[in-house]
Amino acid sequence: MTNGSTTHNERNDLFIGMRASQIWGTLGWHDIRQRYRRSFLGPFWFTLSTLIMVVVLGELYSTLLQQEITNYLPYLAVGLVIWQYLASSVNEGCTSFIGSAYLINQIRLPLTVHVCRIAWRNFVILLHSLPVVVIMLIASGHWPSPAFFLVPLALFLLLLHGVWIGVVLGMFCARFRDISQIVTNLVQVAFFFTPVMWSPEILKDRAWVATCNPLYHLIEIVRAPIIGRPIHFESWVWSVGFLIIGFGFAQYLMQRYRNRVPYWL
Amino acid sequence: MFPTGCDPLSASIIARDVSVEFPIYENSHRSLKKAVFNLSTGGKIGQDAKHHSVVRALDGLNFDFQEGARVGLVGHNGSGKSTLLRVLSGVYAPVHGDLKIQGKVASILDVSMGLDPDATGFENIYLRGILDGLTPATIRNKTDEIADFTDLGDFLNLPVRTYSSGMVLRLAFAISTSIDADILIMDEWLNVGDAEFSAKAAVRLGSLVDKASILVIATHDPNLVAKICNRRIHLQHGRIIEDEIISTAARKSI
Image 1 (cartoon, chains in turn orange, red):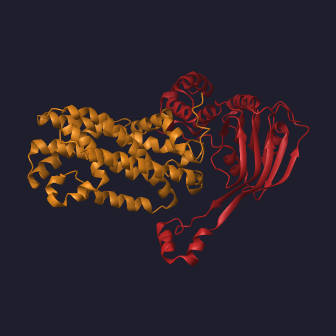
Image 2 (cartoon, each protein chain N blue to C red; image 1 turned 90 degrees about the horizontal axis):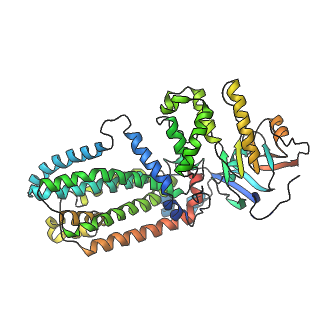
């Protein structure tokens, strides 16, 4: 009967909100169904548009960067799919509370529910784009390495990253309305600095540009096991460490400002 | 007047010095430019930013509602009635003071809350149930009852945007009154639909109100207060200027 949605407070909002999977799961799915209502392909439009993007960009950039296309296509496919997830987690994280104002001002729910809804929605889109990666792997004759078992774990980490990003950015953007514009711009710039289309090896002695970028490591924990690149322990340390810091910060903001958010909307 | 069963598990609302202030962020206040500017210049403008104007919507409210309380909130527009209802339903946390609420709260503030015009009637029933924290099984049990009550038949399989406004209200009413709670918070009595439906709705609302152990309703209708409430609280500028027990309260609503 009750899912604890009435007993949360600023201290356990994150925890209780994340456990209310019934609520955010339903809302997230509903969002996706709404977007593709009356469409024939439905969410598989995500698959198709990713496929087109990967094939076109792959042709072009494998020539520009002088890469072997059979290696480049899977590399690009994973990178783009994960990048799309991260970019929309950040961009939509900015509107996590503003966009749910109509609910926040009417019904008391853990605020984290509204964030998880967005994270889950983006994660479902990510899962719909993954078949492109499989197609590219098969087309270029790769077989998954034994390290493949790391992929689900890495994807789960990415889902969790979506949550703290949404809490932190959602709070800042609810209070300061300019931040979402700044963030959108930064995300665009970050795309070119992050090894999605290019691999860090071609930077040679300036590889630190990639290896000091947390986004690179978040992509790499999924990309390396899928396409059989060497697995860097360092990437996992970055990803988990970044997650802990992020959740710590999200928890701090919740404790201080959770009850202020409805007043800001 | 009030039943004296005050065991710790019974429903109750206790407010001590509850105040609510809404900060007013003008465009420039809410922007980052202002905050950064304040950091670099400090002093004067920093203070300005910290002392941005606020609207004090509720000002030091004290009250106890125990089981059996039927509270009518009256007052002019802008006297704080709706804000108080939102505080009681847990949307706004008091800026100052203490509020202790015992029992499950349900509120009917905006009947069409969360109705998605592109989703079907059935989907809306389901979504709303999920938002109210019900399990899918419970919602399935309730769905038939709600569907019957609306008399919308096959329309429930169509998107809500194809409904007439009266039909939307029927659906919204049926959904929002399908809740059960110890404490019921309402903004005005609901009157919906044509004569026939209206009578049916009144019965449904009446039984919902009867089941709740505490009712708090904001209204502009003095007759309604006389009919269903046993306590009347008059708000003005966010303060309680009158808090009286109505002895002639009819125990049966409607």
